[in-house]
Structure formats: C-alpha cells, structure tokens
Image (cartoon, rainbow, N blue to C red; front, side, top):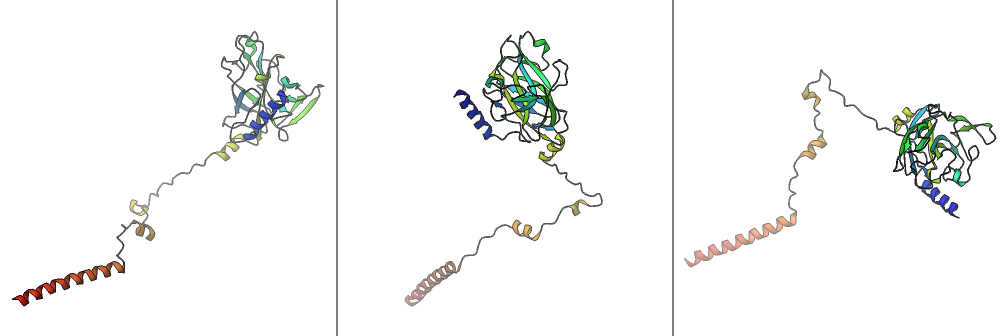
Amino acid sequence: MKKLITSVLVAAGVLVAPIAAADEPSVTVSSSGARVVAVNEFGQSTAAIAGGTALSLKASGFQAINKGRGGVYVVFGWVDSPISVDWAPSNGGKTGATYLYAPDSEDKDNKGMSKYVAFEGSSTASAANGGLIAADGTWATELVVPAAQFEAMDREGNATTIDCLKVTCGVITIGAHNVTNPNNETFTPISFVDDIAVAEAEVAPQETETPEPSQSTSATETTPSPSADQTESAKPVEDEPEDGSNLLVTSVAFLAVAAVLAGMVLAVRKKK
C-alpha cells in the first residue's frame, strides 16, 4: 500500500509539470524530494542527437551520510517507468531489466558518461570523479550524454540498443557500491534535438537593429512630417458649443430684462 501511494503521488506531481520540455529544465522523478537540474550550455534540458553534449548537474535534497559507505552513481540511460520510481532498486528494480544506462569505465578519468559522487569522509571518496555530497544534501557535476542511440547490457549480458527518440531517457542516480538508498534515487528526463545551438536560437527572442540614417539625408529630411490624423489629434480640444435649448433660455431672459428696463424708463418720463 505504501509503495502504491508513493507511486500515485509521484505520478501526480509529474503530470502537473510537462516532462522534458525543450525550453525549461526537466522535472525530476523522486520519492523523497531529491532534485537534479540538468541543463546544457544554453540552459536547456536537451542533448544533441549525434551525442557529446555535456550537461551541468545541480542536485539538492539528497541524503548526506557523513563517512558513509559509497554515495551516488550518476549515469545516463532509460527507465521503464519514467513517471514513477517503480524502476528503482529500492522497489525491486534491476539494472539491465527495469533500467539501462550507457556503459563507461569505472576509472576516475573515464569518458564522463558515468560519475561517482561520494559521501564526505567516505573511505572511497578519493575515487569520486563527480565530487562530494555536501552536508546539506547538495552536489554538482557534469555528465556527458551519448548519442540518442547507444548500446547497453541487459541482465544476461547481451547488448541491447536504446533509442532515446522512441523511449524516454535521462539522468539516473542510484546508491553507489551496492548500497540501496531510496532517498537518492532519481530520474531526470532529457529530450534530444538535432542541434542544441539551433534549438536555443529558436526559443531566444530575436534582436532587431535600428538602421542608421543615410549620410546623404539631412536631419530635416529624416524627421517625418506628421500625418493628417496625427495633426488633427494634436490639436487642443475646444469647448463644445452650447445646444439650442440653452441659447433660447438665454435669449428669453435677456428680452425680459430689457422689457423691464424699458418699462421703468417710461414710468419715470410720465411722472415728469
């Protein structure tokens, strides 16, 4: 029941945010809140189909065990349940079965497609080629992404082709040195494009240049004359004329006053 609830919650969280959008960092699938932001040099969660893309990884929320055995393996590959953690070792998942990844040597100076991030104080920290997990659960490293198609080994040791244009691939983190730790199991999907530089240019705002005036054109000529509409709209707004009813009332009042004054004048003359 606990596993079912965890899967439902994780799936719900992923459905809220789109997976592997080309113009924003990918959503990390985790059961414990651990998060990995994986972006290329242009700040996008994309890799070139031809391969060789270096992703900058910044992680947070991981469990840090001071002087603990192992740490975290960071690899690039495929999981059979990208919107949950059913693929993970803590849920019975097995490499070569529920998840596959691009092979790389275990040497510290490998091709960069596999990184080992160790706990601080670990007896194997000297072999870590991905740095250390800080006490606050953060770490950072770089991971080289293979081509969209790569060969991986299944449970029987047979080579199998992974096509990331047909299935969801991404950055995988699991416990290192056979230590199963659900707190440090994550999957961060990555999408593939023909050229990451072109993809960046397509979403970047286009800049427009202001043309300089021609040398043969005078300053007076470069100043456009206002149009008729602009001239009309620039005039001050005049008071509207009074309507006919107001004029009639004014006229009647004026005549009444004049009649009263005339009557008063006649009355004075009669008395004389």
